[in-house]
Image: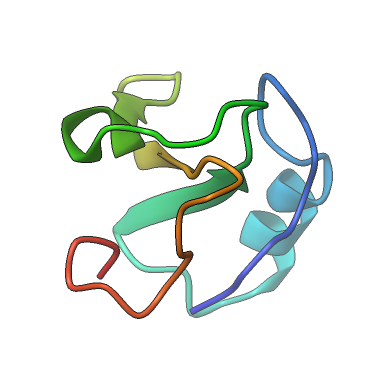
Length: 81
């Protein structure tokens, strides 16, 4: 598992293509997770996790954005896992 931290609003980190090209143990499905803190106090649980397929479609690469407001507790919850 690799964790890439970025504050990008859109797209994927520029290091990702290098990581995929030079790390021989990349699995058939890759999930990129970003944690965002929008300037609101709470994010509803049903709106907390946003998933999308990253192009090109022939690759199984997905992006998950976990959104937490400034009063939400981050981590330690079964929903995050």
